[in-house]
Length: 63
Image (tube, rainbow, N blue to C red):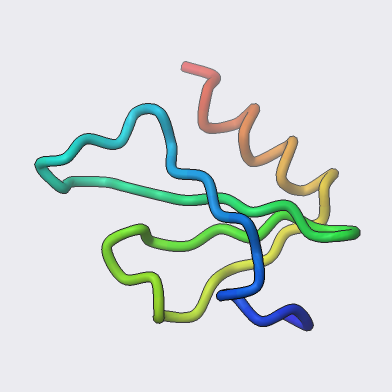
């Protein structure tokens, strides 16, 4: 990822709870979307192209 993860504007999933569990955060980049574990914000983040992120999001929402 070319942008420092701390310089990004991270948003936590609305499905995340204060009790922990499966929490993710996303941050828009110029040509990608970054994803990280909200419980471990200093760990490496994943970056997906916008097209790949849309496909991933669709696949996760499709039963």
